[in-house]
Length: 86
Image (cartoon, rainbow, N blue to C red):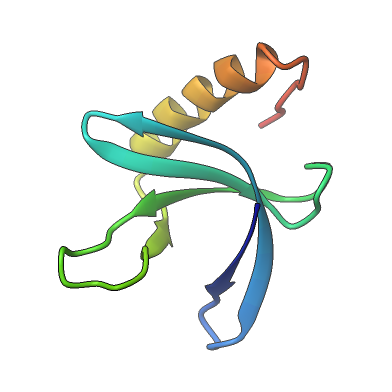
């Protein structure tokens, strides 16, 4: 699945969703700037409000949260034979 996110300059950046998960009621995406996942990867968190008509995702900024979620994605992707590197 391909999504578009807006960067800090307001430009739309296409990302490819590699995996998704729900942890403690929050939805997270593992997305990359290349379809095969060989490029830069990003962990995005769903910060949508009930009144939003589309999902709103933001990069996970908290280091401990990002590390925890990244480990979950490593396990999920490892089951598919994909090795994620820090």
